Image 1 (tube, rainbow, N blue to C red):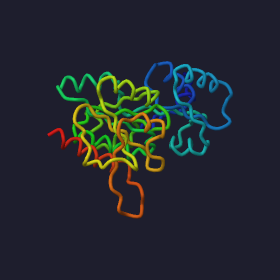
Image 2: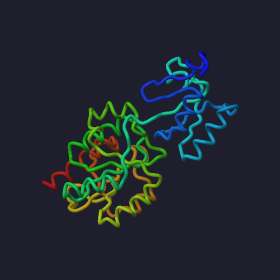
Image 3: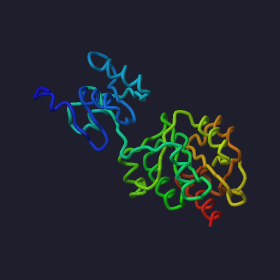
Image 4: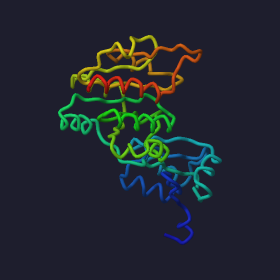
Length: 253
């Protein structure tokens, strides 16, 4: 490595920047949340980075160069950055095995397009308190385990298994085969406190704006809702998830 190249990368929280650094990161096989490419960058090693990322199924995001300037805190990013998780991911199998090892019916939370890091962190924190065996998130259109999620979880991320999957509906089908009932937290469902959550349960939580996706909601067994008496027709995702998680936990006492 040339002396000048030593300035080509820097890790800022969970961000690795610089063409050489990102290229080697991909080759190492380490888990990567996504690759950030400055708009218009396609020359030289950038094209190789893109090709290798696609081969590994890593999400590639085209971003404004000014955004890369800001989040890399002055480091020479060369138009390329990579977000790495703040914690290692588990698998769905590991979540199910963990429930089995505790002789408990699986209790799982599925996040559908939760894009706010603080919300995911808060969900993980409450999940740990409620005895959730694991959380499942999609690889695309959902925030990953970045440093803000880790910080917001207040340490709970160290104790809650989080699996990242390519397709939520396929995962739901798999959970159903394990005798796990799937509950969508959304509007126009039966009251959360009138719902029987006994047995294996997976709670699907969507984003504030769009809620649970239509195709995913259709694949759920039951839709549960919280009463809304105010003028705002939706709750913060982590708040809604927390209320229902505690009801599931209460029924398991």
